[in-house]
Length: 236
Image (tube, rainbow, N blue to C red; front, side, top):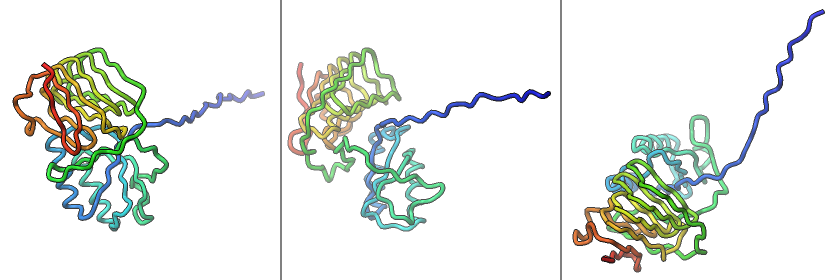
């Protein structure tokens, strides 16, 4: 008699998970759109690094070759496309980003050049879940919290970034990048004890270290959006 060896069946687990992804909306002509993107990346070169990105292709009528060129150009800029929305059938196939749909919009932030500042984002319901981080945020680290305010009890180093649905409070030196109000609230603010930021952004309007008044460097600051302009105010 022979006894058959029976291997226990391995369970295969499936789970759904909600993740935050940035949505890029290319516009024609692509050369001009890439020029605007490159201007942003000069000011914040690591903004899209290691972050999932979805392309919104509604209204972008291009052929497959141009689409592959678009993806290649984004990859060279370290922009990783994880999916595409509203793409025509000719842009869907093997070795191309999958089609995604049904995502919940959480950001009205626009990445635009200084010469064409966007209008303030429309107000939405206030975000209600604050995030508190005790300790310093090191270069290369990223805190993304689209559901409320972020409070950092420590320093935000150069090369680090904070992205918040509401306001951002930094009880230390702010040397990195802060993007506040991505939930759509134009009332979001940025506070820091020592302002040396590489980039400050609220509602799609931003200022960089090169464009900020040197009189604010090293000061305790409040930053708010007034109309289509960021206003900095020294608190010390």
